[in-house]
Image (tube, rainbow, N blue to C red; front, side, top):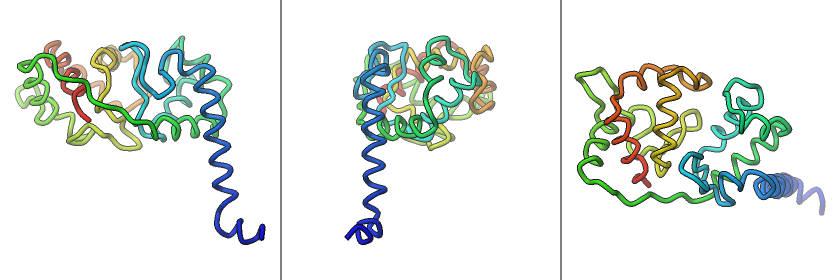
Length: 195
């Protein structure tokens, strides 16, 4: 009987359940304070993790742990995590649902949609969609943007522009430097409305 269960992959399923239980324990013990139990952040300064790619989350945690991505808040949170726990946390948050935020300012939203979909040919700014996809869903290597807090998006763009954030795609340094303050604000507002 055990051989049949093993051939069906059930021990692997149990390991996954154990990993998910460990992830839930970690989230309930520390992550929820800023990111919420379901990956909804408690404040607009913290990213929404619900629906984010598991590989991306695991890589960010590893970068916080190693110091490749600087954060006085996240480094101590990631220091004790094992690679398996980072992977499990990624899978835990990826399985959560994230929803869009209702639009606030239609004219600003139109500017943000234009920049997101088409960029700005006059400043040499490529569209956000060219890397993050038409719906802002990203890839395992590039973050999901859809539904993210505008404030968090703006903060990250500023960090890329100041070269404070250097662990991710270096292309973002150039892109961030080409965004005007209005474009940054508008595209962050538009991203929040994507589902």
